[in-house]
Image (cartoon, rainbow, N blue to C red; front, side, top):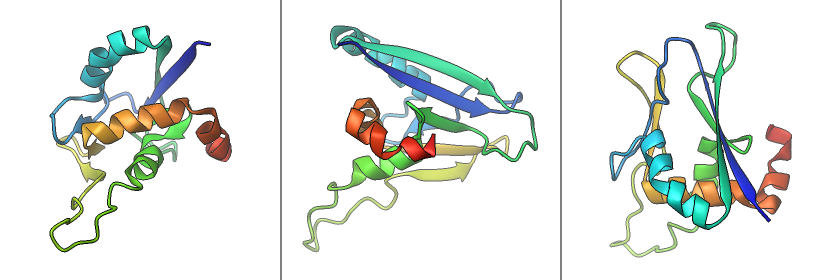
Length: 137
């Protein structure tokens, strides 16, 4: 059975590409998706990138990424669960597993470790996870 990862980027007209990068590798989302295309093909996973332009001031969040209809920020939080399993004083969790910050143009940008973005993609393909987040779509 073939699965599809639909990546929807919701943004205003003045944005040329998603303002997202992997904080550890420096890859942008388009670079990461391009890197993963052979893996998607091998695993029979289709990739559907949707560019959704919204009018400025429409009251909708700008520069938002959704994986199969689920906000990436939500998936990243879900993917990070269990990463902080060590409670010893030497096992300090990362300060920012997911960070949202104002970019150079003033638009809100996002960054997260690449492994969490990859986990978020896998979670977005899971039918049980999709069903659990059906109300967000």
